[in-house]
Length: 417
Image (cartoon, rainbow, N blue to C red; front, side):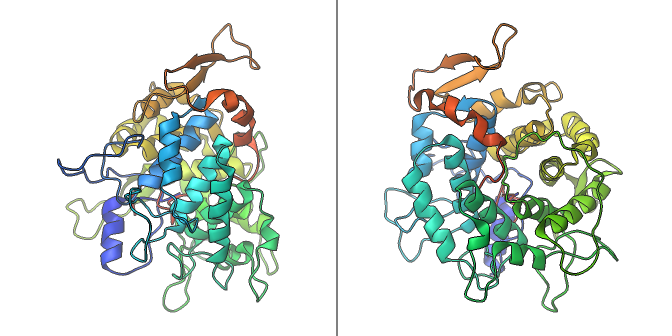
């Protein structure tokens, strides 16, 4: 459900008092001032103001599907970010209680739920966030970036994935008018005729018009299938088809989104990021983050073959972007690799798992497949941190199940627009 996440862009959005934009490709965040000391346990070294909870959650999702158990202090940091209400802000000083000035963030909350479910820990924390998310559902069945803001496809998708991952029956999450999260997601879907056939919009414009948005589409495909950002490696392969007509099922709407993504990636193998207003660079640039999200969405919806060209492109070109973008960016590539059965430890010659681990405290445990290790008995290396113990074995299969509790991309995944 990504995010998604671009600190500078989100800051501009806040100034304009607009709803947060989709977040799916990670961009380097502003560096913290020299006087700012980053919290112990936090992943990344950039200013966490706009993406602290998001990047921590993304890191955990990517680590767990690669058999890495984060350090206890890192998990404790994420848990401590929760307000008593169950909500999370994008980032806050946890030494002070949340108050009416604390800006609740549905995307950060949903990402934290997904991460903690993947870690198979802190269930009371998860339940508290789930209750809060349910309490701020809009009347149309969806969610906005902040409570009370208009629903958008990205936020609705990442929350939907979080609720599903937490075991909440999505069809039962209805408003007084009978609208469900699926109702909201389908309201953002474009028809099969015309420009952007099959895609999802982020939000309707002031005139109610829907405009295709690749970031929103990648997020909504996962949300409509009741899945989250850490979708498993699916072997199913089907031809992308755009279903026409009224009364489509939510599955058909998701497949329409996959049809759009497959077509968008068929040419260059990557999506494009339009230049920011006032930017010196006037030509569109490769959108690595949303491309990675599209790969996950295609693979999860049974079109892994349609994502092969994009994976090859990312392996060849996205290394520098991920390294500079920090934990969330690296995690996005890990998730894309995993969803397509690609080796995240040798992704275009880069060990993404090692790169991600190095951006936070030493993991409590790692399982690295070796020529002598069996699939059931992976090699285990435990750090001095101790921490989360051996429960990582129990959680290995969870990443492969349907429904994990983003993208940023209305999700603030990484601080990008």
